[in-house]
Image (cartoon, rainbow, N blue to C red):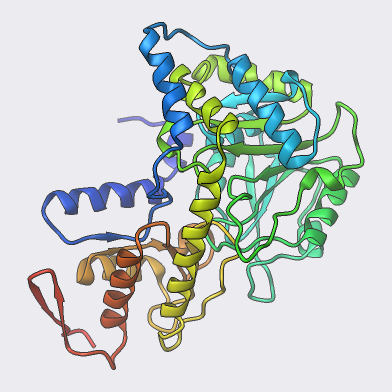
Length: 405
């Protein structure tokens, strides 16, 4: 079979592949615990469900405008004013089938062949492949000090004549680190000075712990004209636990928003109408579900970090937000792909290799499941890795004997 060069260059999403593997094992009755997912266990807000059901009950479900329903745009306008203190209009907004499509639309709209897009490691697994899909070249900045927080100098040094954009995800998937206010301020100013786009992937900015608040990128913008190259990406998947509804949006200048809408009109048309009405319900409804989810996640994070700190040799940075932790397991095994496979085979715990996020030796562990699953999974992992652990472990009624240490 003859495939295009582009098709041959794009890798399968490792997180989606892990979901598939875990599902297959569960169907076989295996006692799998999934620490690899990015999906909160909480339910969608009742306002979202009711609003969606009300529209479905009419039976009148038709095409939506390619860039989103007016009602959803209105809700996004209100949300942006309330949470970003930024006044925008309908022509600044493009609603898409998830934040991923919003980013993809932006990349298609701004990149020419060989244009470069900069983002720091660790990065979300899809960024490099998305940039390549749009014909661009991913440029990765790895902090020299070994932390998860790059410096402005490190990013500035990567900017060249082909640089078109910088992508920042804060709090960060996979490590949960939130970039500092000073860093975001300097980055906005740097991108304005260099006249390059700044894509702010803010999907987790409401899921921040310890009483902290995520920096507001609009606070530092000096170019208040319709030529601003700031692109804010948001969505309902994470903060409202509405992953299956697939609704995200971008807020940007009118010219770029029009181009993104045109591109989307030829790809998928507008997002599914029932999902858009669900998002309207979530954005306009009672907001207590976000605070409830945040408190649950913060407690789960504390449990996970405490357990990880009991592993000899594991280095863990306490996440500021999201529902991910990104500990360094290189003291046990330097190749994260092999380590993830080992843990899946030996103790049926699903993790995501750090290599996929641009940092070898790490594993991404999700703490958005139940406390019991988190504790059980880490107990299994410690048993599999720590030579000082007991020689036997029971998974349900299955007796495991460790014969590899």
